Image (cartoon, rainbow, N blue to C red):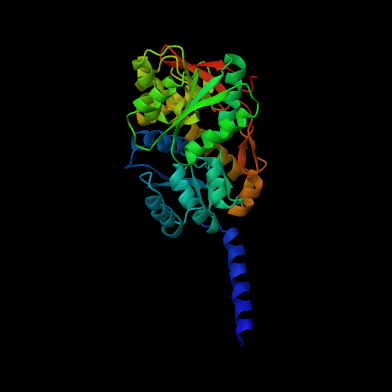
Length: 390
């Protein structure tokens, strides 16, 4: 057999293998669907992971108790990624090759997801609701049809919120404190989008590195520039650090607006007086023990009874995204394949106690991206502007 003929056969065989792989029923048996996730069980975000894991498990247990989906119950396998891409790669390899999961749901971390999403999708494994920078994860995947992102983009949401702030607060001089790397790049990209509308200038910028705990120099730079609004591209600990420095300076004239990752109930609970008055960009509803939403109250009551923990928005979102995934399984029918479910998922809408509106997937990303502006008052986040406000 000549070389050309052999290469043609190999290429054809490879193409057929790829087609079979894309239609995989891995993880699906007569009575069970095996899914996996990788989250930070040993790294810097570990304290918050019980909420995410337990939120998923509660929804799965509810489904299984009701008989499952099309006669199949779901089994969840959880692996540790330590917030490290290299650990995430090993975790995903195990989930795919050893555990034979059908899908990876609610995996945590921008870096870990960026490092693993293509690996999973190329193996025909769906990745649903990765927690992290959706735009980056989508790009790394090559816009795979097996990837569905539910976290709102940090650039577009920052742009929407900043435009509202400029219009309503008459902001003129903006300062930006951002994390070095992809997250900070997205925040700054959103500010660039908002700049196109005019009406303000970026008077000062200051970066910080992951792991930094001292933000005195960054806030001092904002003060020297006499900004009237600080956009803080920060997560939990960094948001607390920025607000602590603002309070130390008795700088009551400046407003601080944190991006989606920093608008967290943990910030309000841990920061106490130091975060009073902080503004945040909200992409989902927050509920606490005195919520008047009956579905939210039931979720929190059930979560407390099962895990002896008070559910936060991370638990609620993990529960919500798992519900959306289950709805996709139901829509796909009994003859379940990853490609078939991906096709069905495009038509599955979602709305519950965490969402501002009915959501669907456009190009496999959640939409519409509506955000609210909230402020910490009396130790709780209170909505200042409803989603879609001008």
